[in-house]
Image 1 (spheres, rainbow, N blue to C red):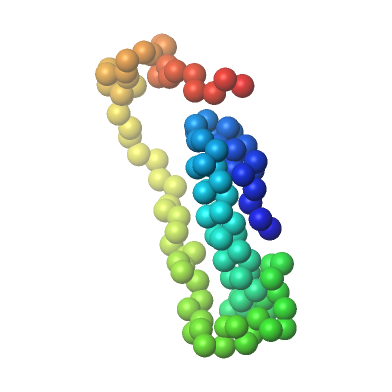
Image 2: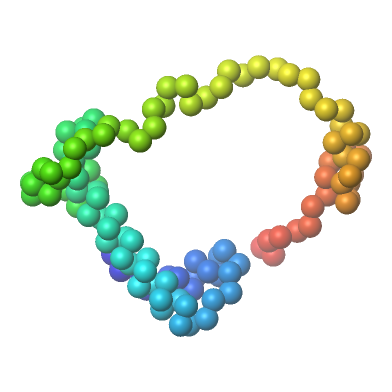
Length: 115
């Protein structure tokens, strides 16, 4: 999939980022290269599934990764979450003491989205 300049401009508009046409053209080129690399990675075999995953899967993907040693997962899911323990928090008045604007019990923040 090729990322177009129009796609970049739409992403920039949604993210409220002002970019010029030249930047959009450059970002489109760079994002297309990243997308092509991700497609290449999608064809590599998954050590847990034993086959290529994603749109780039093919019989030739095993040859592409024959030199690459499997490392499994980058991070272990075990121990990723802490126990849910109740603790005493700071009093609400102390937390809101330095708030620039506040309601009875909440911070008031400026609106950032128009729509």
